[in-house]
Length: 138
Length: 138
DNA sequence: TTTTTTACTTGCTTTTTGCAAGTAATATGT
DNA sequence: ACATATTACTTGCAAAAAGCAAGTAAAAAA
Image (tube, rainbow over all chains, first blue to last red; front, side):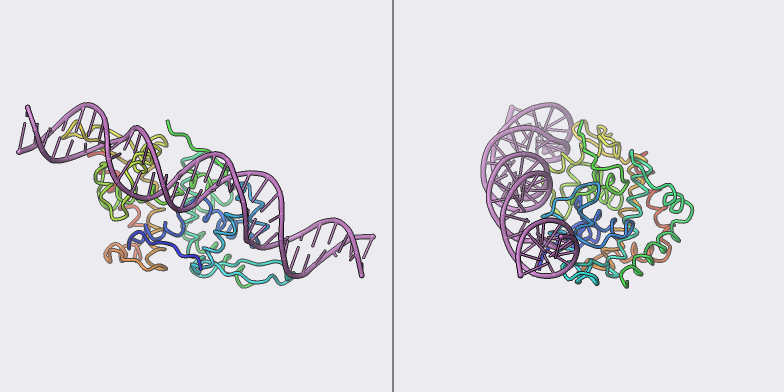
């Protein structure tokens, strides 16, 4: 069981104890916006996470109850990672990162997603949370 | 000038290139919610950031146009750090971290802030953004 | 004029990351 | 049945980042 040290009782600080690095939220982004759910799929992302880092972060996320790991339906040699409700609640954080990056940095965002977020953020957040929940049941 | 390498053109990834570590968003939290603006004040926070890390992060934030550095009004030996509009736009990210940490982790959050965020998030976000802007003018 | 404040910098150790290669349990093709 | 491929890791090592203690330097206060 991977343990994390808690630097203080502040909620921002404690959230960062779990999510504050360059890779964790990218894995969750891939689950929410790219429908990814296996180790092999996470490895294929553009940012090229190292295999040991990916294994470590998945273990932390599982230990923290943000996702669950189960043998895949089709193959016994494959695992499927799914978001828990604690994981689904990270969707708003990811969406704020999309909006900030798209507004202030040189990035290429999906125009449809961006338009959706800019015209009705609350509805879009709910939509992506619900989609994430449905994927977790499949 | 501190440079950061951009791992991809994804807005989430690019935001994390800048903000994805354990300290950067704590400095911004202190500016937004604790009215801090000087090196010495940031050092006093509960999480005990090291002096070299703080100096490094302030330089990155300045290079990225998230905050500005100026000689303090009262003392020539003191600097005042202020949020730019790009910095003010990080407020929603911090607020989502507050909400997630308070809901899912063992933390102690200010009950007034929490109630305010839970009853009317959008209004509260605007309020703290506006307060941050006003501080930047003072 | 000495001491204190303020904002760092430097040197060193420890931890984390990144990279390449290796392992092991299925699963597939012939 | 047997060899090859897929999938999910682990291991070892070098490089980068973080953490810690001490030192520096300009300005302010006593």
